[in-house]
Image (cartoon, rainbow over all chains, first blue to last red; front, side):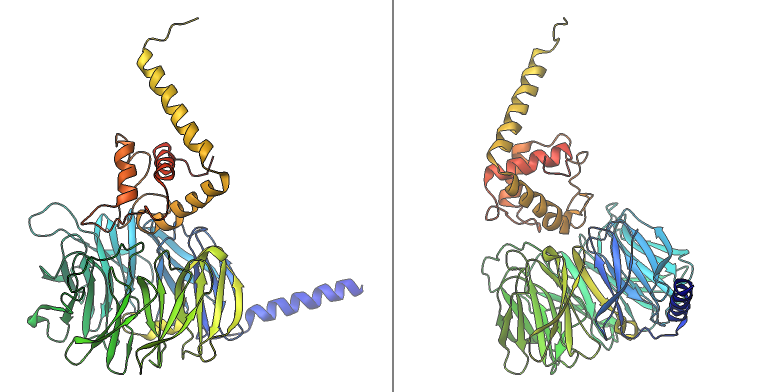
Length: 389
Length: 112
């Protein structure tokens, strides 16, 4: 009798726990790249809510959030596009839309999902609610039959998606006001091997990092007629570049005090750019080849992780003095960092230790650690309302 | 008892078995595990965890069919100038690169 009551009571508790309405503003997703699974986590008490499997090859996986911050669209390496319901902790819908994909974006109005593909090279546009294919933009360059791998896909205000063609060295703007027939504007000869791109938080400037030469390509989306121009040209000063054992990434635009912070390619430096005139404002010597260079949301610090063999290290740059003020050794293979919405803590995936560690950004102390299976990207729902999340 | 028709084939197979056998014998099990980890995780960053390619080309058994092992070893050790493929010689010996080439050509996903 008592056991029955207890069972009943726990059942009631369980049901009411599930039914309790909750927000999603403190939720996030951790990618478990090798297992093809994701964890849904909560940043207020730093706990795991659920684990969702069956997402395919998640190496280099990334995601964007719906504007209600309840759903996530996960872009997998194997071309998988998966919509996840964070509150129900399950997959809503999953399609495999290409042979090899690299990332994606969600339109300003939240109604379109764009995916950038390596194979076949191009961008595909889908409805966000049903994942129905609306348009396919093959990334062929000029008369060449060869299609380019597409990188650095972002959304921009005005129903636009912007992306770069890795092989061809071009930047394209796709206007999706009529999503079934996107109007594409192409900018050619933007530089050799653009490896990634991002846009400033106001959506004005699109910047592509170049692997094939020292410099970045800059496009003013307010004045596209002015064309693409090269900035920080020749920052390597002719020195032989160091080998790059992992491609740097341009995640969310890192800016602080009017300056932007980007990884140098082939040298152990973070480049600082004055966003008024887009000239070099300084450079910070760091521990190795930077991979992610991310600013704390208030811009007071910039955190950097590195390519092998320095991928056990994190460095923190003070944005007033441009000095490295802290070097952390969280463990083997630190792959990604994500700040809590207002930056009091940072979560980082330590892949080879099978952990996600949480650090206090004021004291630099580790305040929590969560188990995770070969974690890579960490994405919090605060991205949902950013331009170019 | 049947006589082998192509003696060369047999000799080649024997030689190749001997070669891979030697390579395995001289790389400890723990080092093999490290190399597999590097292959999956670090090479996988560009070539895909399942070797189906990414920014770098596919490294599946099918994709490597007909490619000379020596050439593959040289690419691993010295990289390919003009492309993002870096030289991995500071991470492994030539013999260890040979072992990785063998793993790739055979399409093996475990160390043994």
